[in-house]
Image 1: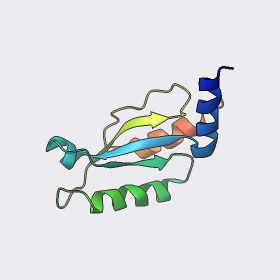
Image 2: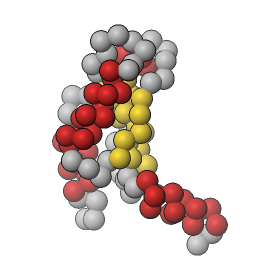
Image 3: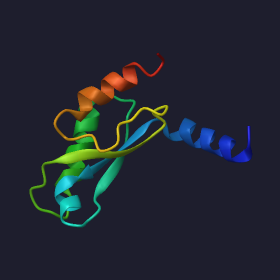
Image 4: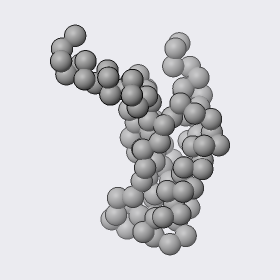
Length: 99
């Protein structure tokens, strides 16, 4: 294993699987606003972190979000998941990561 691969492995062991959830109101207005969220937790804490991120959006009353990036999800595709039902899809993905 190369030094770069070892460093990446240590990073992922420390942070685990994460998703980047972006505020769509900010994104549609040319601003980047979002948060990296640990993906290996129950849906309620994820929803709470999303709500907290939206509450401090630079765009008042922001409600919509999307998953724009991910780390350590073993190559599964989840980028730009629409806000319609990303969390059930995410939890299903994580539940099947070992398969």
